[in-house]
Image (cartoon, rainbow, N blue to C red):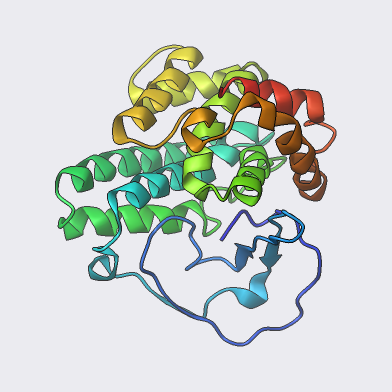
Length: 266
């Protein structure tokens, strides 16, 4: 499932009770009522849902996630981190407590991913990884925050819609590129990220450290790794405009800005 304020085309006023049994931890779908569906005919990836489609009961068991492949483990790690950094970096109102929660969860994702890459049968690490995914998207981390947006998701949804890219793999490409472009708009928060997540001083060092960690665990950081070339950018940029309008951020992300961001990922 995707960010709660993503594009919604219709309103749902009721839904059958949902019972969720997770076999992969990434999107927080066990604790929110939102999802995304790719329309292959229109090459769009809009989101659906509201509180009516929040699961009534969810089961998170590390044993049921033991079969997750290495690829989808690292894609999931990137997905969880993306949910955390969107609000963390873009919010106009961001209580320090919420920042601390986000930093703790990102560190947990990094630590448990490293453990699981070495020992996939570590149920304790897999359980913490799954709980971090839940907490990243159940509303806790952005409680008390305001004025935030989801630009990374708005951009990545077009990669998935046009090129059938796994969501987490697309996000690990988009995130560092977007961070390099956006950092000057919230320098202090990027410096905080560098300090409390990676023990570094500058915004640039923090961004580089995250990108290097993605490289280390084997999730893509360049469009070329997804089979996307520079000649594909105009089509992606056009598709992104559908998403940014639906997300309410079209003014901040016109075609030239989206092009600038994506060129940083070539």
